[in-house]
Image (tube, rainbow, N blue to C red):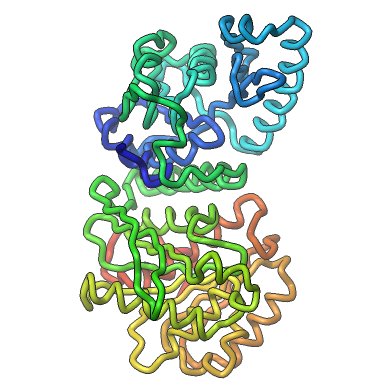
Length: 452
């Protein structure tokens, strides 16, 4: 069975399929939550604006995973009378479910849009994207909402859908599906990683694409992306002593540098925060290697999370693996969070280290101890202004560092950068730092103000 690696992979493939819409007056509308990571990649591929179209499934009361319809903004509603009849749903049942769904819909609209106005659809092509279709209820109501908002043409695009459903959908003007499944059971069976998408990831992606559009407007429409159309994505296995590390490698077209992610405690290569930051680095033309430095069994022992020498050894193994596969011309950098930042600094302190730059987000550089003085790679420490304890530890660590080091404080951010716009700011700082020290000759990539 043909499977997508994850939603981002599905979105990149879908973007290639939809390339004919590049340059058209089109708005990409992602269906929250799982459809937004797919839609974000389509928006990048088409250089088109991204928004959400908020709908809510109406689940059968005793089997909420089964849709008996869906609702959307503007009081749109679609009902599946066959399911309602088979399940014996009464009018009272329907009113109760819809009342609860309307309240959730309202709160989700407020959360996603915040101060961001809804994009104008009047006279435009609305390209509605989800991570897949099972019954089509939410897709149908999304099409109705787009019509009510003035869209002239509606294209529904998904990575996978049942073949029989594709043959019966009439709400959109056109349906695009990469996989027309004859033996369809569930959308998730067509993904290797179908982890739930959090609201936080949705908002981060919307922020990132809004910032891209703002930058594009200020530079006269010049794209600063790294050539996603020819990107190479692969799952990799990296030998490290007696075990194998699992990683996700993304190489944009003409890639010259790879940023290796060393995540912190309680995180993984599937972390929405890491994947969000990685997407910003991709737009700057940088490759990324997201990997788990510990096996699931090792993570169960909390002591391993703070074993900085062990984490650093694994990071060094990944660096050597990159050199053996892509040669010395491929520049390597580290992006570390929490204890992963300490591991990045520890590894970079090795004699002969060729690491070109380091960024720490909410990191614990103090845990690298006496190794800090040996770090020569330009290092950017990004800390939230409200993360006072970690901020103090970073300031103290700077006193021990002899190489080029800079501290950037993101106002109002706490340790996990969960506040609106704060992770986007940290990601932009990281992209600017890596671009400055890994790709000094690259033109057209704006750097954050104030970076040395």
